[in-house]
Length: 198
Image (cartoon, rainbow, N blue to C red; front, side, top):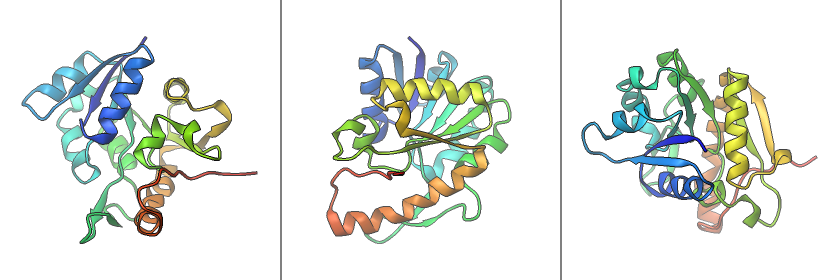
């Protein structure tokens, strides 16, 4: 059992919190009330950032001291939305939210993952007709191993997990969000994910 704080109680945060609780972890979900996030982070070993990516950096920098020594699992994509509310442009072109978080939070181990799929796939990868791929980006091997174990608890098979390397590789997976609005417009909100086949 691991103590986990989920920042963000929308569809992504809610589904991750429920699945991780069912897997036996002690999970706290921070709401928007003053002090809720700080209180949740203080008691957690792992913090999941499921807040809207456009405001994530500001929110998490405000928790710098609470996040020190924690593993921060970043599942968000920082985008500007188009007129239909779907992602239109990256807010950090040539970089990534994950890189900005790691630079701003040097005492925290940031691991980027789960950001290349519709949120329902995060906790039910086997529901797809073909095996999906989930990516890891981060500087700390031990932190990435902890996240691998969390992914296993969410139903991800070891062979479906690809470690891309350092946090700089997150700019590639974050850029994958640019596929999403086109896929949704062509196929609707049917669950999908990126899959690397060999």
